[in-house]
Length: 87
Image (tube, rainbow, N blue to C red; front, side, top):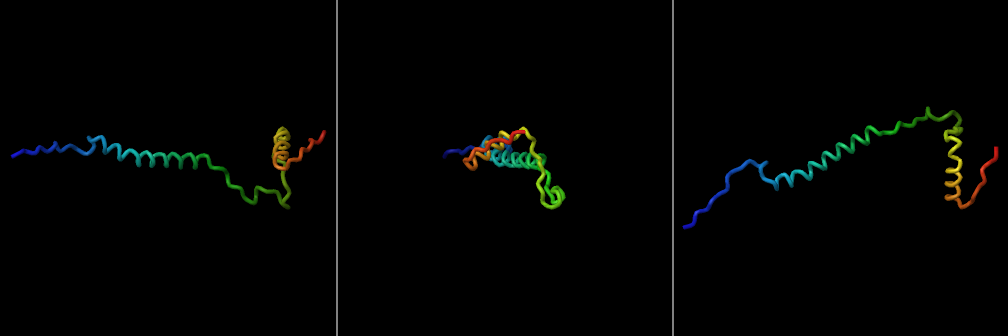
């Protein structure tokens, strides 16, 4: 007759494969909290109707040094090169 030996009853945290199974979902949960923190702390301000001038007139909000970039963007979008206005 053969005798069967049973392994010592050890706590669950002493087995390596348990940590392998638990660590995947735990990392995903921690990453989601970190992503929420980044999204919440870098949130843009809300734009309301009070931010726009009355009558729907546009406001010049771009600095004049953006002129070369705007000219290149317009040329890329339309294919027509426009010369900047001379002061």
